[in-house]
Structure formats: structure tokens, C-alpha cells
Length: 455
Image (cartoon, rainbow, N blue to C red; front, top):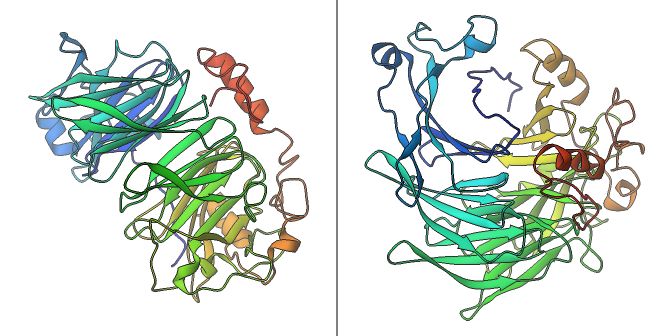
């Protein structure tokens, strides 16, 4: 896979406080964003030619909770030129091939505190939102109007993440109360809690369904990832990744996990320990490296088997016995906490960190991982810092095992941070999130766990 550049196609202003989460609709024609301003915004994409003909075409209104009247509507259009020096505000005169986005709905008057997570139902007609007010709301689009149709209550305090399973029948939530809840959709727009799991010892940050829908991953402040499956009677933990007695894993808070699209044969995770780990099933026929985990080190990093070790063909993952193991560690690239990771449909893994960097990793040739793009602070342009980053960071794989890598994966240690990261790792997720707590609505102040604050 050849290196490529990223191009900013739109900047969408509107929220009045930090944006915590965004989610694409199943068809990719809408984007939902949620914020500390207690609102969800729905952004709709359309060709610029249509926007020029009718700036309000296709606008959707937002309804207040449980059928109240629409509260607000936003139809201004934005294109990339508006925020790249080519314009000064809402635009309707961009190139015909350029796509525009507009805010088609604002969902508000529901949550009383920060909205931390938003997720689409696979049908694309419903949304679920999770809030620091300890509730989850379900919204439905009907007749061009978004309406809150259900409220899920049960968590003791902040709900950190919500996720819909692939067939839209189940919703998973997690929170600061260290629990994972599973809800089932019932007739009449009702949702019933079918199980509550208490396996984590600290805040649970994220829940993500396997593409097959029979396996759920959760992760959080206790540095572990837990896999849950249904045994016909209840949901149980079928494997724990990391933590005492569970083999190699992250050494600090796990902020996000994501399954490989399609068959979901692999799992990616990111952490406060500045690394991304790739997990795969032993049943796929790829032997684990001698140290238990390969490493894919950055420019200052020690060696490993490379992320390509996790890319063996064939085999599959059994929901009842996933038997995942760490196949690769991507280290030495991020200077600060890796907060976000996502796996694209074409095999590209995107990460985002506390140093305002976005990095894209992809499968190389022959079977090596490559850092495709390094975009720092949202300012790097094609041929600029990205190319400079590629010169030093393009290839990830060398030989070595987990034993040697364990000494070098955290920022500040040899191999833990790329060259040029001054004081990398000096500012921890705990410090960052404590600052966050003071800026949202106090949602996480005093939270248990190593990371402490507002995430």
C-alpha cells in the first residue's frame, strides 16, 4: 500500500463546547456529533450543486424529548474552502464536484450534562446517546423529524459509551460505575435490560460489538480488555486481555478498541501507554512470537515482528472461544496518550492522540506495516510535514519479541517515543483528563482509576 496524503474536505462549526464523539450513519451520508454543550448535531452531505439550487433542501428538524415541538433547525452549508482560506462563511458557490455539509438537526433538551457518546442503529433511522447524566437516550427519525422515543436508566453515574449491535436488536452501554449493561429492543419502542456485567475493576471507557454480533469487547481504566459472549442463559466473560495473570497487554488505561471490518478476525486497541496493539485469534494458524507479542517499533523503537504478523490469511474467530493474543505492538509513534483508534474498510488503521496528531497505518509489501500519514496538529499538508514524517516513520517492522519490547514501549524510554517528541509521555492521561473535568461540567471529577478526570 503506497503512502498518501489527507485533504481537509470540510470543517463543521456549530457546537459551543468540546465535541466528544462522532459517528457516521450506515450509508455514510450523515454524521452525528455529540458535545459537552449537551446537544447532538446531525450533519448531512449533499453535492454543492444541490445546495446552490436550494440551501434548505433535505433539511430535517429536531424534536424535543417525547414528541415536543421542534426546538431549532440549522441549514447553513459549509465547504472546505470556508475554512482553508477560500471563504469566510457559509458557501453556495464552490466547485460543482465539491460536496457540502449542513447541520440538518440539533437534538437537545434531553440530557442535562455532557453527551459523551453517540451511535447509529444499523437501520440508519435511530440514534442512541450516552451522557454524564447517567442516562442513555434513543432517538428515531420519522417523517423528517427526530424524536426521543426512549430513555434507558440504570447506571449509577456517568455513561461513557453506547454501541448498537449489527442487527439493531441489542444496545451495550458502559460507565464510571465499572459496569457493562446490555439492553434488548422490545415492541412499542421499549428497551429492557437483559444483563449487567461487573467484571472490570475500574471505569469502563468503551464497548464495541464484533461484526458478527455475538461478541462484545469492553475496556477501561483497569488496563484490560474483556470479551463477552452469550451462552444461552447469560452474557459471560470468555477472555480477558492484559492485566495480572492474563498475558501481555496494555500497561495503562485502554481508551478505545475496534474490530477489523468484515469478518472481525482482529481487534485493535489504544492506550495511555502510547501504544496500539493488534490482537488476533490463535486459531488463525499464526504462531505467536517467542515473547508472546510482536512489536512494530517506530523510528527510535526496538524491533519486533511487525504488524504484518497479525495479517495471516484464513481461519476465523469463534465467539464462544475467541482465544485472542497480542500479535503486534505499534510503538514509538505517539508522543502522548492514544485516545482513538479505528479500522477502515480497506485495511487502514487511524489513530488520534493527545498531541493533536492523526496517524494512518496500513498493510505494507511484503507484509509489513507502514505509517501512511503523519498529520500533526491538523496543519500538515500534502508534501509538507507528512512527507517529512514518512522519511523517518514509513516502515514499522523489525525482529524481536515482547520481552525486550516491554522495556521500550512507554514514552520517555528508548523506543517509546519518536524523535522530536520533547518530554513525550510527561503529561499523562490523568493530567489531561483532570483538566477536561474542569472544562465540561465536572462529569469525572474524583473518578476512580489511574486516569482520574473527564473522559
